[in-house]
Figure (cartoon, protein in one colour):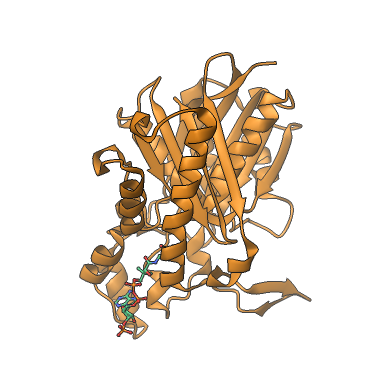
Length: 325
Ligand code: ACO
């Protein structure tokens, strides 16, 4: 059994339809909804988002990201013995998006399941995959965050529809004697469910309740900053590391102001924070692997460096993973 799991490849994918803030403002004006590029940029840092075509599902986005991650890792689908997909926008009620992705990859037979922890989903999935590798239950895992959040948006609610987008990111995690994932920390508190939720369900062939995203933005903001800091500090303590040793902070890409606050609480300057939210908005479980892949492919995150990944989202869920690349 190996002592660690390490990331050996990453990939990410955004669907081709890109809407700048101005494009979205023009579309929303057609619905009688007033917003502006200036408001969106000032309050969120978001400048554009990508929306998947109507016939494209989370597994399609996951497939593109997964192929790139496998290619970067130099492994074939048949070399994978575990697939975990983090998503809150599965293709179907069941089977899991991980099973659908497995079939599309042609990687038949390995364990495959979804993790539902909304925007913290990738942190949860990575932690589960790491634990399974460390216990010998898996040797090489494909861990994916994939979402089509545009399907959940109420385009009459300007407080939420300007924030989200679609996308996917993936990593290949392999058992290793060399340090990789050093520590992680996961939490949830269901008492905060109502401040960020999609309070609908399927029953008798119909959507019951309200199947669109609802959010108390101010409450989410306040909670997010506090729990991100606590998770990052707990993870550092478990690994015996200090915040000043972090080379790159890769937070959930929801809102630039939340990222500023989280970095400043940890004493990390913004030039050590990976920011991609401006280019794709909040893609929920896909946001951290999208940012991670961007950091790796742009050459900023280098082998041997210390990366802190941190996420927070509906549930409420939150957590962090500290890893050596
Ligand atoms: N365009 C123009 N005006 C808007 C828009 C918009 N898109 N949305 C809201 N407003 C208006 C409101 O109607 C309100 O107007 P009023 O003062 O006349 O009533 C005014 O702006 C202020 O509204 P608030 O909701 O109080 O605005 P706030 O400064 O809190 O910003 C925001 C809203 C951006 C959602 C903020 O609360 C936030 O960032 N929250 C965090 C939420 C988040 O990032 N969620 C992502 C999902 S959760 C996660 O991933 C962790």
